[in-house]
Image (cartoon, rainbow, N blue to C red; front, side, top):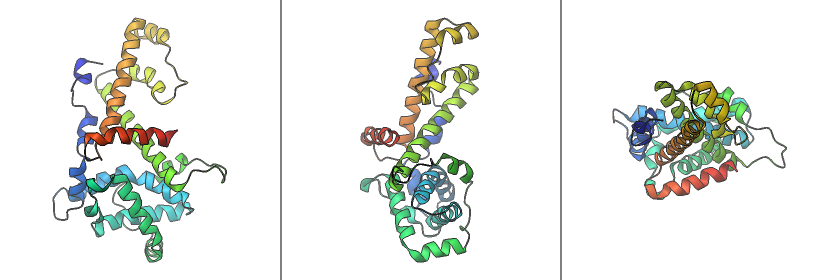
Length: 249
């Protein structure tokens, strides 16, 4: 990885994550602002999958869960619910989960959502992919709806960071190096074979080890950037990181 990439280079990831800070949440909850619709859409795109997992774990069918998730986000726009989010009162994902819980608890809302077929789709939701990601486990060991929400949130953070990392490497002409080293980022059993990679790329083993170290460092930076995007201060990042690893354990 170049010095520019590892020391202050503004990557595509940095640009995207910066737009999802609390300023974006405020914009999403302020009707009339030119950026309000785009802000809400970006926030919804980041959080719909964890909320869909939560609804499914609550026992709703696939079709009903799709409708309820779409309707929930439609209501966020219609009622400007996001305006009630306050960084001083808790994490944004907790605000959304509580809002979803209230939505599902209201029988009228649920019936209306199902009758309307899920309301207006504000942005693409790949429900088939989300459904494949929901593990089928015995009922006595299945995670709670809240745990499923937290786990999906954590996985989304990791997937976003990995996708942005790949973009950086592809755009800098290092796609093959990324493909060779990146499996170890998400699977501890996939330890890179430095000697094989070195031979294939005409590099020394030490150079490959250094490249792997830089890859891991940049991946951690992007994860932190993603987490920083929806907390009110840097002080909360460490707590969020602990929550992320706890959700994946």
